[in-house]
Length: 107
Image (cartoon, rainbow, N blue to C red; front, side, top):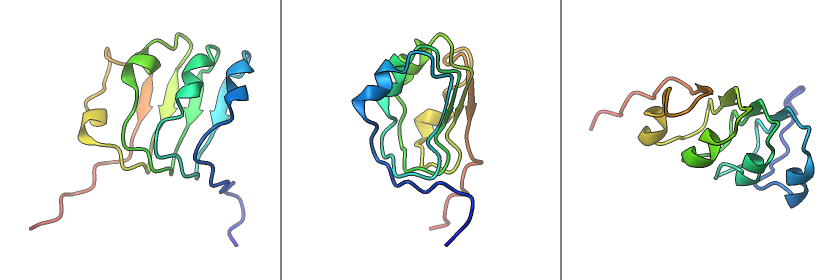
């Protein structure tokens, strides 16, 4: 039993999240999201999204780029694909935090 971490094992968000119009930061780290929770794109006041330690492989860039308030998206410790690593400014106007790339296993 580890202390600290929230380990909720969420893999999707309730639709109600879209009604939280004043939500500025959300911490969804250490869960089981396989896909970026797209409902978050509707929360226009969001500045910080923490999705560290999930199972996310891809990110809906167009939706994220349209989030006017977004400042920081933490995707560290997610198995994101190489295309996500190419998303740098000015493609995305916020800080995209990723873990260092795993060295490719030698064949």
